[in-house]
Length: 463
Image (cartoon, rainbow, N blue to C red; front, side, top):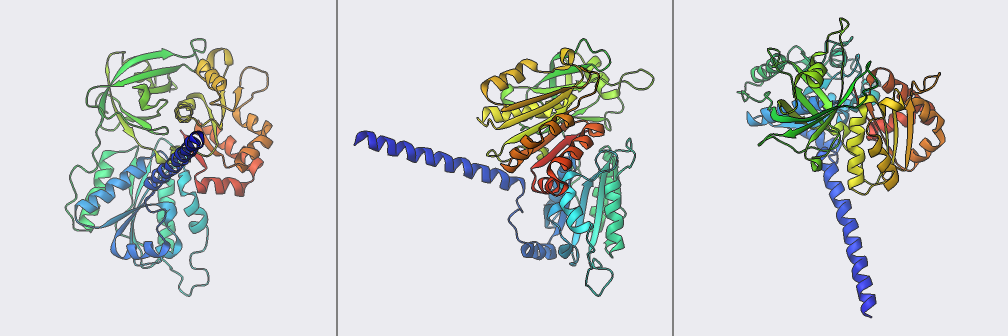
């Protein structure tokens, strides 16, 4: 009898643990989108009473600015509701609502991945199909803060496209679109000032300011000494006293460069470590300009600042690349310094005992560019990785890249996805990201890939 009671108690405790784990997962995902369970009718009623602040973010910056916008309005006495752009539909846009759009453009002019549902379900469909009036959004008043980088071909293209589309369907801008170049402080203050003027509010003076803490460069190691054409460095940064030092896999380290350009010059890097390691680890590729001089950010980080010296850094949450449901398998795909984001996710999965992980990684040569080789081997040995596929492009006459490995393993990829696995991509936007996307389209079908993106099972941190 005693043994039976002990067994029953053990089973009860085990079941309690499973329930607790599921509850915590539910709470975590609910915090990421507090409106996920709000009905369309409730949103419509909210739109009549509150200003909606809708965001589409790739690296988390647009989401952060949108959150500050909402908080600024709330602090100044105007109720405001924060929503991902994907939660908006044509019916909501047809209401007498006020919507502030904070949207980024990624790469050479693409919309953020998180905007895909809005684009396919709203912008790609005639919003007035079957309606008598030609301007279905004539009651909508809106403003757009467009985030981009003029160093790319189509500066702020998604914000500009959204602006034109809204006006073509009758919506009226509250004021001219504000375009922000590479996080420029002046444009963000212009946005703040326009909001204060339009809503007749005294907006908090410092709502657009950000705090960068002091971190100490503890180590800097050249990872590929035999490859002088593309030096890659591993940096270890430890927090100075008082520095904010909490993050999760997928988050971004925003570094402020020194000198007269410090108010404008910021560089973003995927964090390759977890807080349990006590340091932020980065992978930085040293870049050179056409004249042979070092790039501004990578040059300072890899050759300028010295171990023991201070770096001004801010941790920025990037919910677009946070971990999937822990019960899902995870396919991690990347190249080059994209291993940083993949490393953080793999370490987090290892710590949590989640072993349904598949890593597909590419670099130039195995002899010189197999970064963190011993650690990856240990993940295979202890079962953290179920599968590992490597693509060293220059180790054979014919170039082999990560998309080729995916095509070679098409049946296995389909099997993982059918079991619910998520796909996370980190690395080069030009070349790799597009090639992987095309490979996924061919293997899974465009409709499946679109569905994975819309459900959050296909996410990218590409640059």
